[in-house]
Length: 232
Image 1 (cartoon, rainbow, N blue to C red):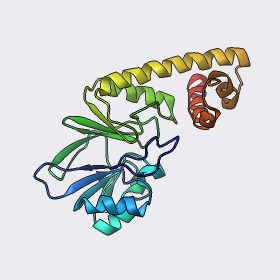
Image 2: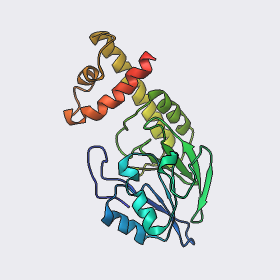
Image 3: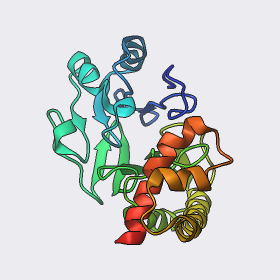
């Protein structure tokens, strides 16, 4: 279910996933989105909601979870224990069973420290780790490269937190890896031109000169992560 919150960071809006086995009465809700009451009321009406899962702590994925939990009595589970309500925090490799479904938890840091993906038998819910269009902002490049290498070994459909479904997780993760290596080479070249102590903003203005300046803010976050990686 698509939340009506389109934007440069959310693409078409937040994808709130409502999952259930064909014969199940209850459902699992993944990423309720903002505390957007009309959207949350539509999600609750798809219930009964058995469980709420959150892929990471950003508000466009989790802000509405407490409201939904309070109105459906469904527990909230996430990797970050501070986001949980009436449920334990998720762990890497854990198998969650609800609404007739089996979901395997993969801790996939890089976009955020607490990012997870959720693997179904025939699809992977990727939150903001893999988007349906474009590339994601990262907080830790080393972690993200390891995450992409892990996902590049899994061939399945991508159900992202924003944007359309994608047919092949392994192919997309490999493309992301190639893109990150290309960006790293561009940052290395920029540092040679600007000097080793150049700021993230200076690097963005050089490397992202052909990108809409309205996107330079998010690009600066990723460049900062790249600089930390190169300087560590």
